[in-house]
Length: 223
Ligand code: SF4
View 1 (spheres, protein in one colour):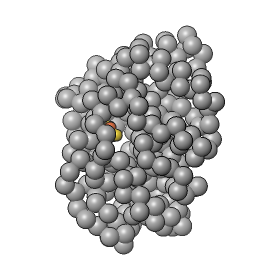
View 2 (tube, helix red, strand yellow):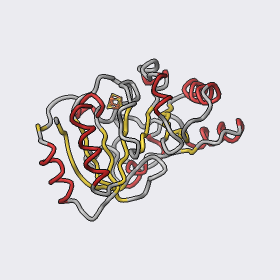
View 3 (cartoon, protein in one colour):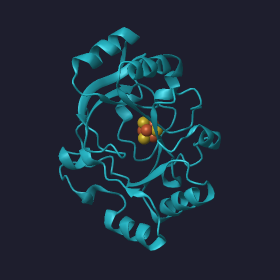
View 4 (cartoon, protein in one colour):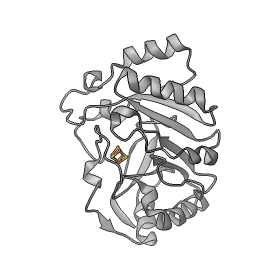
């Protein structure tokens, strides 16, 4: 498997935000979101065997929450699914962060899928494969990263159109060139504005801020 980094930090997103978490970040992505903060994963990385990855994860004990992310981890489905199975067997709570562009049907059932449905202003708005809705369970989470009113309406209408099969998170996009300030001035969409829209429409969604961007300098990687 081609790996960019394995490290432990505080989970910044999803309903697990705030918990210590191990991140296994795979190399490579087939999308190019305008606000992507993980472009360093597009190339490079290190080839590692399943046993080498597991050994590195064990070194980060006692954390037992683990996220497999990227890039797009499902591009390495053949290697990453056995990794997920092994981690579940070993007692980890496993999260998979994916765009949902690749098929998700083979992901082991105990894995909690955090599916980042791309909105129009990301530049990858049509990438989510609707067939993947069949693979979602109420334990999974749909994430919408928003940078405009148009993105918000896309996400709202998506949820109205497709009966909620998973919980949903609306998260303001962060400027990818953000530096210095650890505050909401780096958000492309003002969280206060987003909160007002959610309340006005009576949406039962979670407003998510990328916690790690408020704890550490926004330009830092590997946190
Ligand atoms: S899917 Fe993720 S890693 Fe890939 S371009 Fe979009 S934000 Fe970046």
